[in-house]
Image (cartoon, rainbow, N blue to C red; front, side):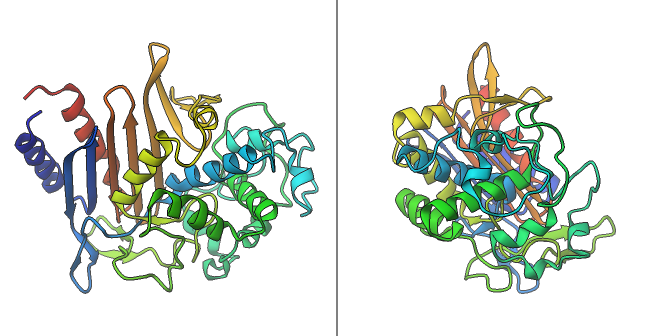
Length: 343
């Protein structure tokens, strides 16, 4: 598709959906689109820009997976290491056979602190445990550590945030660093993601988008009372769209992990009911027995994030939104235009 047509189509999607956020797209080394819309701060009318930092919710589980793989690459851990041997916290009802591999692939069966079978509103979590108390990974433990297993370890795939909190605690135990310090030093700095970090919502740095929750009557509120004050190993980092492009490039260029470990991370290890597979921290779509695309996504109140990499076409797309919806519609249209349109 010709560049001017692509940009016009993106503009039309934005007008239709009132998309608020940033789009950044590259194919090979060439830039296809870099566009921002809406406000990072509605009250002050500060506009989103290409270097605006956005929350990406579960999109940053990939950072946790990379960190674990780095520690395994160094020989300080293994995929078969058992949870009970890695952490000294009490988990009275947990299966003794839970491994790091189970946690990475959402097959551990541990109770999820945000169980969508029990609740459908993330804000329900903070009725008994105020979100402003959640500043360290250990603060998440009372939400699930004394609950019953959902199923035996390894029995099936079921998306699970608690499993990634446990992985973050393992990273802290093995490395001796706080989880956020480990990621910022060993992933963000190595990948050149210098604008990204695990920021506290009551102390956000300059050029960070506030997340907005919109209501059907046209009113809105910010998401400051909807999320933990500081994100953890299951989600909650802030990144720029350009930094996430650097993440794709650093990972696929083997700058963060060696070739063997990178390919292992990007290999399907578990299948989800909607046809997607799961590697380590990343979704994978298989067509005709080969990888069609890799996908990262994150949904929180006031946060919507999608990023894809098509290896065969060397196409990378990052869409960050500071609203609860919008990124999926935008990235789906861009994928359609770049992969299937000839105009």
